[in-house]
Image 1 (cartoon, rainbow, N blue to C red):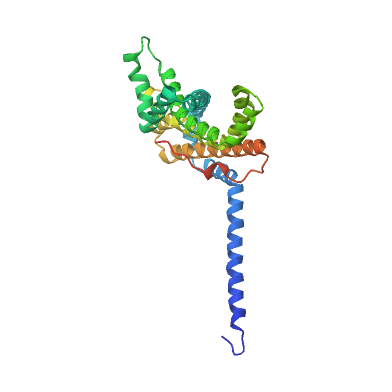
Image 2 (image 1 turned 90 degrees about the horizontal axis):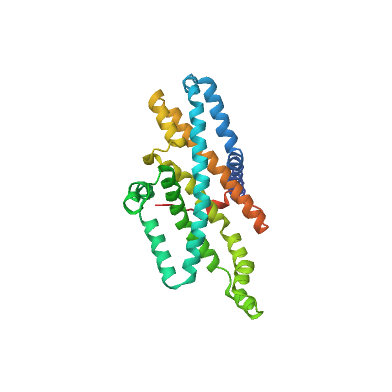
Length: 281
């Protein structure tokens, strides 16, 4: 240090430099986050132009698209039926008594076993207890709805229970019926608060479609694996699988955050849906 130099000045300069680096890093990460999908698509575009293996995969694109369609169909039906099943289970749990016990037991049992077990059992065990034959498609839809419904039930029940009791008591004092109180006061508030959770569960159901292969259903994941077995290009096929599920999940997360913000009247935050992560065992 030079004679006469102020030590506090050097310390402030080093602090300003560290703050500048931190601000620069935050801006860089924010730019990367904002344009991450364009970065992924651009990387794949350049890769496809320079790597000849993608030319060998070109005849397989119709099969990729067919698998994508299968994934979309089963995921959409599974989410729709899962929401209905979850709503029924939540209503039974809130009703109390034997219905609540049966509903909670079914939810706990569904969440306790692996999803692959439920998917396989829905097809293999059903002939032993049902008087008719269940097709693989029916078993797949039922399994996805059952798995998703158990988690939708918990999200809806928690949201309904989270509505302030004072509002319900005030509505009862005014003479409103229980049905009107539930449909006009409780349910709208509960749905607003649980939109992020319902969206997260829907994305999980979408990803669970990759477990339908034991039933012979060729979704996008299974189609990519079969194509890799023929072409022997694991890096390309599995990179395509990862990019597909990441991009679709990211778009769904953004859409859910937008819907939640529109309903609640708040500005959406980046990846609001990640604030309460969900895992399915």
